[in-house]
Image (cartoon, rainbow, N blue to C red):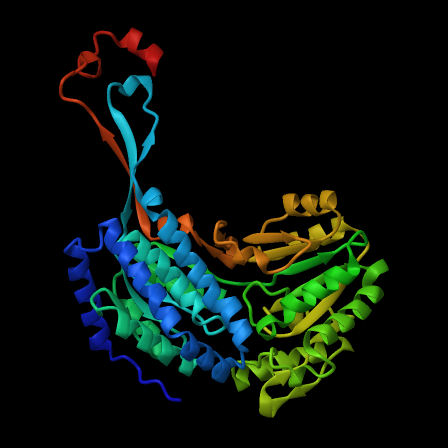
Length: 460
């Protein structure tokens, strides 16, 4: 399928129309926002079959995986907003110090305005519509840009949006990087971007021209630490699940393994057993095993197979863009598979003798989007305390993103800003401090010539 790029003049018109629409203040009432969230929810459920079929065509996602990793997460976010938005958006009181009495203090949560949301291809529905929930909930308008690398999903999303919303409120544009360039020439009030750190820098440079705030959800190499105190069979099963979910094309997928040398061999055997349990003897025949998104992605990931000794897996079929779940041993720390975000089902292993080695290894590298530790609770907490990452799991992988009550976001090279739940509302809002002062009393101490300064000084 060939997507038609949105013309540059159309993009300019959409931005102008949305700015005019936002200026009408129609998006401000909470009841309007709730109505639009309910409309989005209905549109998703009405289009569930079409969305899942598009995900199957573009990525070979099964219905079950499409629902669990895309649709259910967005519906959960919408439901959380519908339940809590009135309370979240209400002005919140703050204490007023003695020196400012009898004034009163509070914070208003106000929409930033016109939002641009650019999504990647790996979870193309979730990562486009989940931020949209925050934009609608905050009272913003939004321009959506899905990934062209999943054209059937992009078209399904376009139909959903155009059938549900007026373009002056929620619009969708299509195209490749030339369209991104045209989009980023315009001025917005907030840009929400999910993608690679390299493209994140491009977005941030463009945003800087207008001092536009950004939320950057990027990626990086998310480590898994497996200590000798771990439950090896369970660790192997959960890592195998997280690494083969979406064929490893997940921004928080386990990227490399720091494993205690005493448990490496048992882990390898347990990992093989877990893969058989998850995908059968031949993963290429599993309806739940996703393919690489493109020939280019396939060739890039297949190249990593030469960076170490294959301990399991290693098969690759170019005609299907299929790469078997693979464990790599004897990997050089400066090899491509250890420098670049893998974004595929290849998992390199690095031996460690203790957790201090793992901590030191992690600290020498860019801050990851996620960190996973399999160890007893006390040791795992120490690893978490002494390192930094966008999010983390102890004795699990991936699942922290599924909690709509916790914020999700990166740190350092893995991103900035956070969203999900109330944090999504705040990402698309300005938190405005207001001091309200009575006119019935006008205390003289603040005025020149400061006659009672010595007494006033004690209050400051």
